Figure 1 (tube, rainbow, N blue to C red):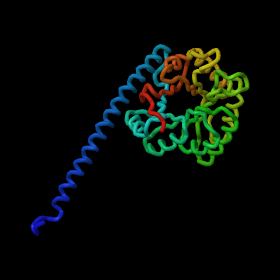
Figure 2 (cartoon, rainbow, N blue to C red; figure 1 turned 120 degrees about the vertical axis):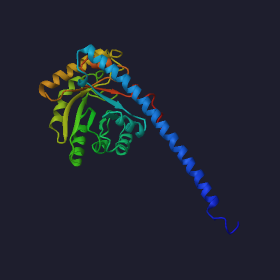
Figure 3 (cartoon, rainbow, N blue to C red; figure 1 turned 90 degrees about the horizontal axis):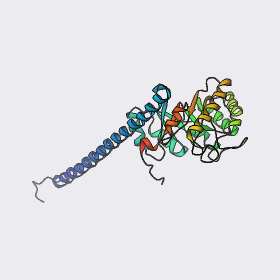
Figure 4 (tube, rainbow, N blue to C red; figure 1 turned 45 degrees about the vertical axis):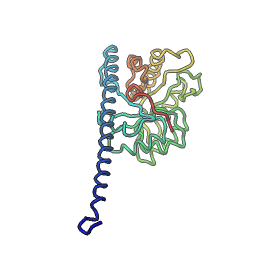
Length: 271
């Protein structure tokens, strides 16, 4: 090395190469994000068309139905892109994943819905981020959620999950209380501190006389909702329908449809 050669010369060249590499990585990342956002926008538009069509067929206004996008197993980056595209209601069915995403997307103006079976020992965590819990199906869970909501100084909207395949007095295989148990459980929610009774939820059953008949199942849920509103007029929320049967749910009176794969595509495998 000669005295007139700056010591930083070769190192500066290497830094430039590194910077170029970082720039290329950033450009690739930005391009990938833009492509994903465009894909989500296209999928959202298709789902919107389906909901609007179902509303027209049912003689309902589009604003009577809320789209809740179920983002389970998809990354928080997708949730942020959905928020940029105007989505406000997102759902998860596992607390660990939901809590992490809610924290990662804080400030995005999202309404978080918890839609999976919920263990009582997860109530405190869920009460920290969920605005709505769709899967209330037993008195012990009501007590746990109430205590957690009071501790967190929050009010959580609750839906009684109805298991349309469950025999009288029992609980469904995928959670939910039999229709004849809805009234008592709803009374418990309405009386609990920190909780608000918002309505009912169901998943189209896989067994029993309503299996494979989503419209009939959702009509039955509407009957349960109608009976509930006699005692609790404000419990007007009816959560039903997913990617495969949202039209039947809207036709039967659903106020909220929970759509995942139709918006986000195939789910990544859980690690």
